[in-house]
Image (tube, rainbow, N blue to C red):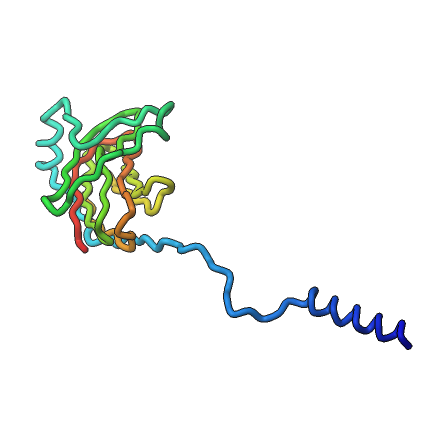
Length: 176
């Protein structure tokens, strides 16, 4: 009888230890960022606008830095652009190297971007934070795209990477 009570007590103890009990906390799930991109407009550029751009010949790259494929991971922008003082304008062209904005953008949850693609190939622009691509935008040759990117955290450091080959211009502005 004593052996029976000991076995029952042992089994009861094991069942308490081995059976999961309800708790007052839940497993925390990572805070998934929900960055989204909404296309505001897509417009075909006029032949006159494209010809005027092409007549400039040697296109000057402004507001962008070339990414050397060997040092790509080391070349992220390290300075913020203060969008409260105005839009950030950029332009660039590259046949083999990706280009990215010289500055990152922070302090807002929503941005608007305009990209004009003067190239004869589709342009891919990637909205990135320091560790991942959040959204990707493709712009057909000869088109202008206006898009709204929202869902950023105030302290996110966002920038845009433009994949080669490219010939484009545009701007970024804060929305909220």
